[in-house]
Image 1 (tube, helix red, strand yellow):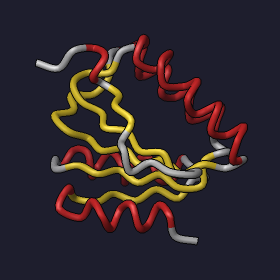
Image 2 (cartoon, helix red, strand yellow; image 1 turned 45 degrees about the vertical axis):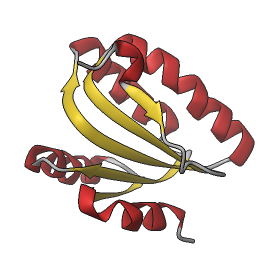
Image 3 (cartoon, one colour; image 1 turned 135 degrees about the vertical axis):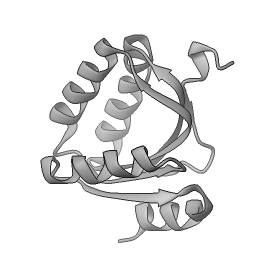
Image 4 (spheres, helix red, strand yellow; image 1 turned 120 degrees about the vertical axis):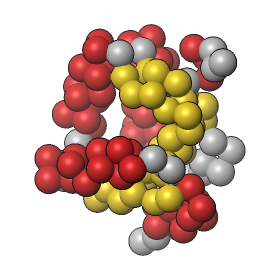
Length: 125
């Protein structure tokens, strides 16, 4: 079982303005309160950032966390250039497709077998 501390894990491949996180379990409000300062720090340093989400054994959000997610996207919508989602579940791919029309950010879904391609896409100029 994943502990609350393990819900958001920063990926070692993160560098410069490209930040990757592994998400697992069910996200809570506390998880967002811990990760948002990292986004703010990166935005302050780089101006625009690119995010990669690795969804592994991911079960969605608690209600408060879903609201946090919406607030997060509204707050940082002009600061995020690209968002790569990597998963292995059909619903994760559909979630990505459904979100695209509502976001200014370039968003792309990748199967877990294409993780390097997702990093390359997130970093490409």
